[in-house]
Amino acid sequence: MAGSRSLSQRISEGDGISIVVRVADATAARAAEEQGAEAVAVEAPIVGLREATTLPVLWVGGEPAHDADAILLVSTDDQELGLECVVSVRDVDELTAALEQRDPEIFLLSAHEDADEDDDPIDSVLELLPDIPAGKLAIAYVHVETREDVLALERAGVDAVLVHEGDVTELVGRDHLDV
Image 1 (cartoon, rainbow, N blue to C red):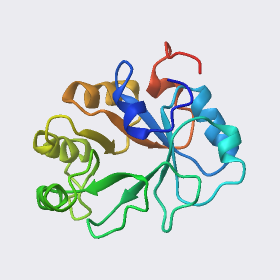
Image 2 (cartoon, rainbow, N blue to C red):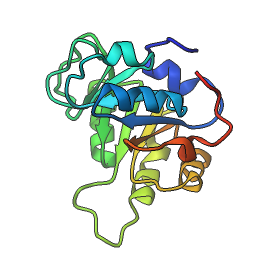
Image 3 (tube, helix red, strand yellow):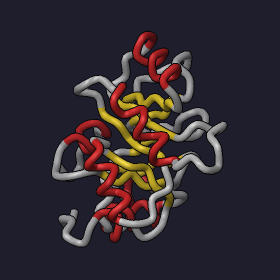
Image 4 (tube, rainbow, N blue to C red):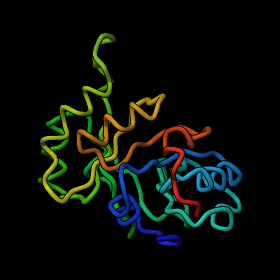
C-alpha cells in the first residue's frame, strides 16, 4: 500500500479506521506518515511535500496546489479539477444535495456550525452516517483526543477521521505498521 496516492484506496484498504492529519509543513507530513497516518490534508502549498511523504494529499484550502491528489469540496457547485473529490456535509440536506448533484465516493462529515453548545460533535457526525449509501466512504471531522474516541467512530462505521497536526501515534494505535 505504500506509495499509493489514491485517498479512497488508502482509507478503504487495511485494518481499522484511517487517520488523516492536517499538516502545515513537510516535516509534519513526514512525521504523520511515520506515526501511521494514511493521508495528509493541507490548506496551503508546502515546499517539499512530495519528497517528504508518499501519502495521498487532500487539499482543504482554496484553489488547489498542483501536488494534491484529492480536493475537499464545500459546495456541490465546486469544480472537480481532475482530482478525487471529498464532499463536505454537515446535515441531511447537504448530504442529499451532494448525492443528487455529484454522487461522490467520499464524504467529510462535520458538525453543523449552528449546533448547540450542548450537542456532542461526534454524535452530530454519527447521525449523518446511516444516510451515507453503502460503498461510499465517510471521513469524520471532529475533535478526538484519545484512541477510544477513534475506536468509537470506527465501531459506528466511519472509515477515517481528520485530525489536526500533532503526535498521532496514540490515535493510530501503538501497533501500526511502519511505512
